[in-house]
Length: 126
Image (cartoon, rainbow, N blue to C red; front, side, top):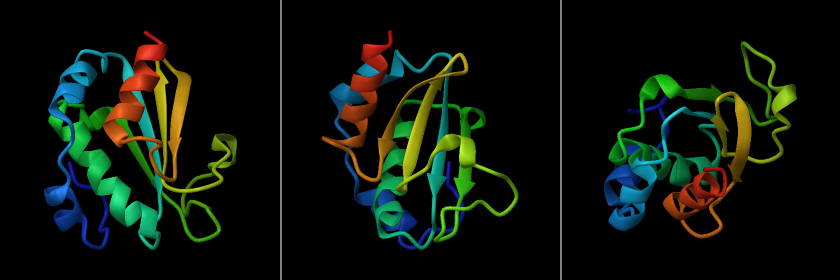
């Protein structure tokens, strides 16, 4: 998977080394999971964390069809849709859904690592 053009995407993707043990745990928890990623190609945090997030998703075999990518401008407005219902304050925001219900979010930067935060979130709701 590769999103819209983000500066240094390939480099940041290639250099990120997710924790293999955590990835093994994640791969068993991704059934019925959808993710909405709200990003801005202009945002420094997005330039770092979006490629890393994609690397985690690729490593666990997450289906691209279960990922919705929404690009916003500096006012956090999307060009062709309204995202007001998502209550976006900071980006990137990765919103995790299971069977249509929001489980949680990773906002701006991970607390620990992307794979650890995602695993913790999914384990809490499994």
